[in-house]
Image 1 (cartoon, rainbow over the protein chains, first blue to last red):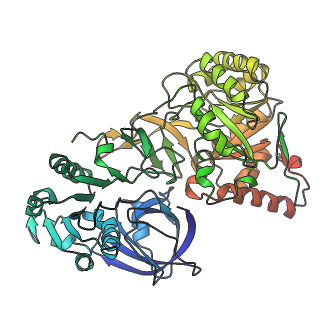
Image 2 (spheres, helix red, strand yellow):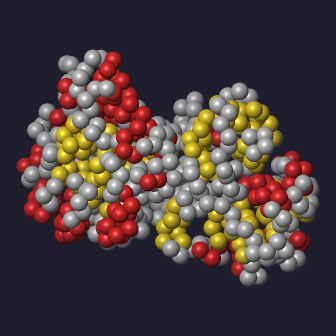
Image 3 (cartoon, rainbow over the protein chains, first blue to last red):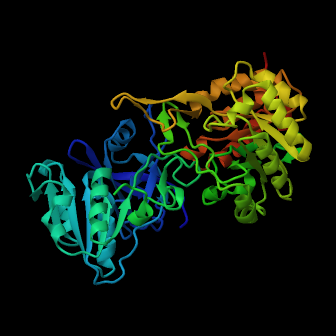
Length: 259
Length: 303
């Protein structure tokens, strides 16, 4: 897919809790949004942060071609993401996009599909769920958060399928981690996961035990985002490959994780 | 438009702007963002005789105004380059050079011989300065004796333009530059990355899998400028300057310090269009200052 470097204007910064921002962006010069697939990401340039040198890779959270609007859900993890989360309406943000591969479509429209997101890992699942629903699939969602105060975008997910929630303190949905959720007693064909690595490893283990198709979204530390610098490599059955180019979406069978 | 042509030891470049090895892939990764034919040259990823998987992840740590990397020359080997990559890039209208590295003198020689046979590769950049491999690499570039030995051996078999990429991790870079000049190097390029380290205080562990890595980016520019300046006064062969060049003004500074051409490296990660912008910016600088040819500017620092 052709990659672009474009200035965007912040049409809204909807603060979600203390540690998250939902940036709504439109191309600054009214260009049409480039085609983007679920699972892909952008590299956002961080201006006006003395300690930030490189761009920050951010999942594509939502795309609305009718409104020509792109959403990014960002968690404050350090100075770079803090600067991004403090952008105000009208500010400009330079993005390189779209980057990386995308989730694989399930084999059939009748496939039983579960999208699992933990914390900010829910970000790519909203666009993926929307895409699946609009293309005649029936995704279900399992979202994991620390507590009800940390929940993100619950109502939006409900538009695209049944939504189940795990919270570590039990303040909403079932208590515990997503892998302990009773939903996983049911039968699924396809699992798609994004979240903290221990969570993805636990889901991958479940998928392998039950012989399920499972894709995970990785976020290895990156520099270039286009497969040039070879910094973000993941060890796979095909050797070291770039998460930014051959990923970020990987079938668990390709990974050398100790599952 | 001013005359931007430069010569690097017999090699004619349409302008002095090249992209640094390991920061620009094989050029193709950036073809969506710029017109590759606008560049003076592209130095492709460090290539070795055999396939190398490189170092384990994590390989990168961001630092103030820069980054450390510990990639460790991951590449699929020179035969893969010749069979799969060269046919895809050979018709792009720019000067493609191959950065050659090795674990032994024999490796360097064998790789250089294979590259020599490629019509559209008019030169190599001999990498005797990679800080991220256990044997070879920087080990060759930190003593005059071993630097001379590898250049002598490669010079015997390699008849096209031979640029030797120098390490800044030495007491006196001009000694190494003189040693490789004496063995017939056509040019030197400097600097490769500075050996550095990053620590995660909370985890009390190094960030890089290899503990140490190579520092690049804006933060290294003053060191690189100083070394280009010193080397310019030590050798007669042309110098290719690199190290922290982020914009056209930085590039002009290197040329004033004595570089005949420059390489843009880490800046490609922040702005994938920066190399082409630097070509435009140099031209604008020359026009504005009424300088007809870039050659007038090389080493033109007023003291």
